[in-house]
Length: 243
Image (cartoon, rainbow, N blue to C red; front, side):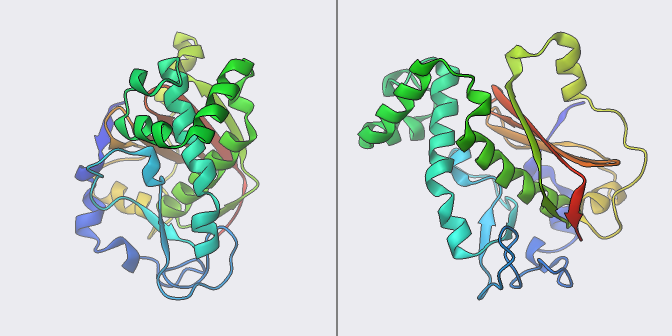
């Protein structure tokens, strides 16, 4: 199964601006926040994934979801920590000159407290996949992808994180190439539109090459698969949603 570059997403050009879809949804444009469900004032949106996960120039028409100001900003520190930690972890160093992402290198150079925090975390030798801040960020991003693709608000996600290099060949193949979906997504959601337009279901959506890709599946449960920098991966599952 190959990756579909985000710029090729036909549903964005064929179905109109994404903000204009699903106006009748309880979490629709300008109605309630996806995360805390409070009424929104105006048209507050959040990028999914957060832009700290990507490099400039950002891909056009990146996914956005309805989000209040407090939720949008309340995760910023953890999202930055997540992005910096993943980059330092995959490069094996918290030294700015040894990192591959320039934006992360610059962040560590100007934020000594964050640099010390990341260095301490890496030296602890703990299983970072269970780091609470990592799980918190993955949980939030997975919720946004479920909403964006299936027009559903998920609850009580079960999150599993791991390095791709830790998977056996068979497990890696199973992760990269999930079983064929037995049914189409619900009529009207973006995933359904993609099926109609011939893209298929499911698909690996590559927001940025070697930086970020994701997939959403739905059978008895909804599942999100995410890969960060072709190094760190996550699976989030739920059978509890609204929509």
